[in-house]
Image (cartoon, rainbow, N blue to C red; front, side, top):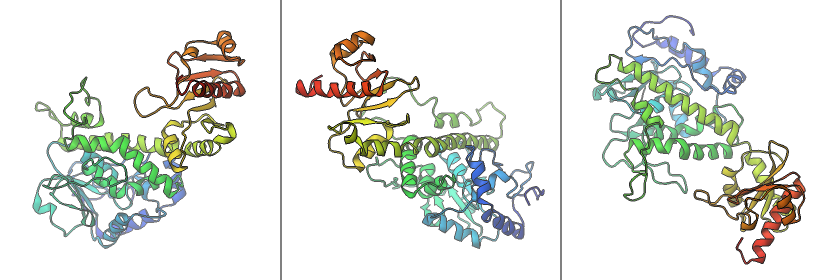
Length: 422
């Protein structure tokens, strides 16, 4: 099945489709996980656009295209709906999107759908033929076309009048979804689980919300024409020319090009998929693991200093993006002011905690310390082994852990003695 040459009209024989579905469902999970751990979800999927007479339509032909098909521990309601429809399908499923000028959202939506079990080798058909789109005789997942949003029927368009769907997560801005945001809303958690990293449900939720805010929301906003500013303020410089949405737009054939539009759309799927995969791998492998370190640091803060305002990280890991959420989770009333940890040089860094906003901190080091270094700084503070305090007062270093902790403690003392001013 994987290597057979099938007819070029894009439709497999129903029996071959059934057998391929069975192979997809029962693929060995450890094999999938070992490949996924290399950092590639489906980078080389055969992006076959229908109809493509010169490209053999080979159902489930690429081994890498089925690596995402390992069963999930707790599939979402939408994945169960998809699986039910796939089990009843007599022919291979088709992912449908519009023809003509393409955008980042539908290219990414198509890419994500082909990461799901049962859709890894689905044909992508680009058309605006409403008769075909509304024909339910075969299984179709329709994105960015059709003027219908009905997840239960696998319809994901956002162009119809009155569409106001958002992610509906607590604390999120009400950014209207594009087709990419809709697919992510309903299948994002399943795709995150399919990375094979044994993520807890809580970690899946954290990655899900973080990934949307840092990646998908911009795509949704751009496609829906949402102003990035609150109010009518003009941008101070031109932006958006190097973003993913702009890069996808540049793949559209120019008026004087002789490129095939469907081939270029396949390129857009690959491009959006590479960025999607890179970001997802970062959140799963790099961003979420240090959260345990940050949680322990905050929980044990009173063992470091009686004020509870100094934290010590036993391992040098990224901590800033987790700290605020961990403090909220542990109901910390008086937030940390400094974090101490060993840096790459073997010395110890004392980092002031950033506040919301650019270059703002909860408590900088005293003005009298800023810009001093070595013996002059050690003499002023009566703390040995001082290295420096940054001229802007947001970071300091000491050659020893004890010295670094004393620098943080002394800064708190200066604040308290001066009534809050440093």
